[in-house]
Image 1 (cartoon, rainbow, N blue to C red):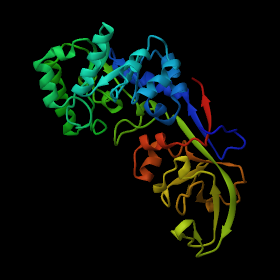
Image 2 (image 1 turned 45 degrees about the vertical axis):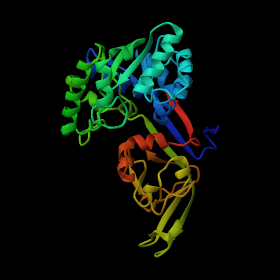
Image 3 (image 1 turned 30 degrees about the vertical axis):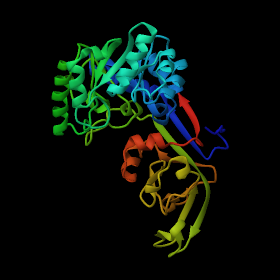
Image 4 (image 1 turned 135 degrees about the vertical axis):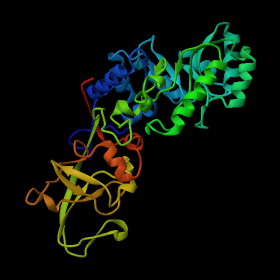
Amino acid sequence: MLKTSRDSAGALLTIDLDAIRANYRLLRDRLGKSTCAGVVKADAYGLGADRVAPALAAEGCRDFFVAHLDEGIALRPHVADDAAIYILHGLMPGVEATAEAYRLTPVLNSLGQVDAWTGLARSVGRRLPAVLQVDTGMSRLGLSPAELATVAGDRSRLDGIDLRYVMSHLACAEQQNHRLNGDQLARFRAARAMLPPAPASFANSSGVFLGPDFHFDLARPGAALYGVAPVAGQPNPMRPVVRLQSRVIQVREIATGDVVGYGGTWQAPGPRRIATVSTGYADGYLRSLGNRATAYLGGTPLPMVGVVSMDTITLDVTDLGNRVPAPGSLIDLIGEHNTVDDLAAQAGTIGYEILTSLGGRYHRIYLGG
């Protein structure tokens, strides 16, 4: 990540660690007796796992999920020695001993991963912790029905495993009335009955809001921690976590009929005032936002005109009247009036992609924690 200074950076990304802590408390309280983990994969959804994980730990979080082995290795120094770090993708062949050395717990998704982990357990002469994932309808990761039947018929395949959880993953939890939620729940219960008794983990961020039947022993919220709305079509109960402010480079007056940006995709319907702002697709501001996004100065909406360039966007600031933004002044690209979910809707995507796309050239400011 580029080393930046507040004064020279083209944009500022403010990350509210206290808001992340508040979001964790809300989720934890909603879970009741179930344990609330924290998903910090993809560098805590782009916000910095080295800062986010200690903030979650301050709220009592002791279970962290990442996607890759290297993410788990990088996270280990930033959490307590007794914290559990789970590797969602399991382990690539040949790296099992490395995971064990860093006290990382794999999520075993296939018979091949199961056999490799039990092989290591035999070689070190002790049981090793693991999570066993079963596929309940997403067709992505986890034991297939055939593999599940194999393990159910020969539980010795799990010898040497300290089975911490049996887990699965919800495909449509943000849509509370989707039929697949109930189907997956039934399949998960059936799968557990085929396996040795063990605690269970099923709910993601949205699954927390599906109710107690989905909570089981451990929930794995991710995006909701970072302010993304967990339930489609309902008010967002999570506190906003990020604010993205970009600096004005220059402002110019253009005449009726003038075009803006590559390809001339926007033409001025009358005399307009255009601000060029120092953020582009190299910073993770998606190209699909061209001619669609809205930025804000105070409460005044500033429509984006033209396409997203590598390093800049252009905004129509005519409606600011005499409040012409000076070079270096800050415009809100994500903030009070334009949330992560709002920007995602403008881009035709989801808040997850907005967060994980945030680039390395922003000067990052962490609040609280």
